[in-house]
Length: 507
Image 1 (spheres, helix red, strand yellow):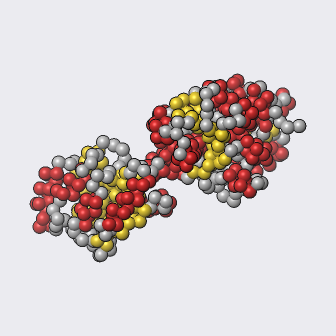
Image 2 (cartoon, helix red, strand yellow; image 1 turned 180 degrees about the vertical axis):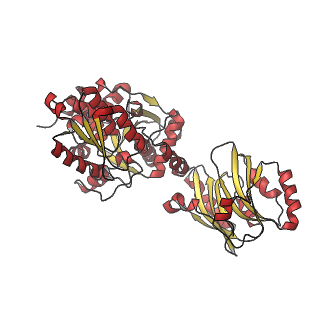
């Protein structure tokens, strides 16, 4: 007999622990997409994730005998928190198997929600690895397995999100976007939406490196990935469920793939609209919505994105901040080669007059050419091509690094090293107000006789920019150099004797 998901969703017991979350307007995202963007704020659940709905609905339907045996779950973190809180509420014990890659914020939260009743076991590098270990423990200890996605009661619990969306916004909706890991969230939403308002498109979103559902739908069968990307750890699933695959194949209209840069940009977008910070999996729906809206060229439509989680490790924000501008096409990144001769650096900056420089890395090396790593603030992707064309027009060989993962992740932090050509080098840190023309003022005030041998600058969003500069000043010109420092008016500090500089950069 086919499963009646509409009845299961309508009779779900999620509201013993979960709450109906806000469907809020996102003004900045709406302006930028030309549509009315609504965010379903599942990050505001007690466990900061939608997973509580499905976990509790499944566990609340266990018999007293099953609860007495105890439960076991495998999870990348959010389902684990839902199971832990549900176990504490229902008075049973729970074993939680989590991948070793799970962020500490999620591990700590599981302990906090479950207390002494919860045992945490770390095993494997993905959900699928943890699941295999949990299956073995379930048999060994006689525990009841609470699946994170491939269970009708779990799917129905997540489906209450779709029910709430349609109740909260009875007016037309063009599409609802939801992240896909194993497929429980999007399956539950689609099961309700397609039964009640089938004209609404239900669109799943995955990262390119964890796209098991997209590949499975394309192949017409469940595909097992050999490896999965771990940035969006909440959706790092190697193989989707049998039931979720069946439902997605029948009810989900399409799956959009996005990369990590787009997810970082989406995290920033939601922060700007809500002042809340989503985890990568939590922002997937927003990233997919933006990509789909741009691809389809839609205007004036209502789009809903499920912000499904906010269990973000704080130290991951460094990566998010670094990559958000590139993901949003607000920053272009280039490798530029200029002649190694006095005045070239100033001429290069003159080409970029009118553009805000977000990052600049350079270290003197080759006798004939200087290789610069530069980030430039742009309005859209078309700007990147125009800037590259302008630089090449001035005779500067230019390589667009916007899609180069090695350069963005590693090389930008490794420009430099010792140089035998850095004679008479002085190292100074400067601060100057972040406004157009400040960098050119600095360069224009320098004597043309002084060569810049090292330069590092990164726009960090503060009112004052900080640059590190190596300047080759012969001893006989030190008086003129001190005069330059006095008239410049920018705070500065001599770092020429810094031991780290002498260890890593001094020739």
